[in-house]
Length: 96
Image (cartoon, rainbow, N blue to C red; front, side, top):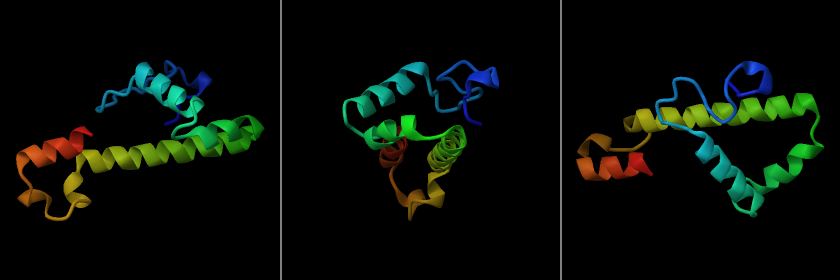
């Protein structure tokens, strides 16, 4: 689900988010992109896109975020020998 203005979801927040995404995280990502860091290229391209392209981009980014969250919830599926890693190592990877 993408947070669109007409979705009834407060901007920057996602309902039932087990990873605790918040307005401050969204603001931080925007500030990083605005300063030329990760996402800067996308931020510059967005004003040039039409509504359909924007919605497609939003859906694509949302899908990537969901896939990443799934990897965090179930790291054994993507990290070889996850079960043999120490609890400290496992916690460190998931907390990044």
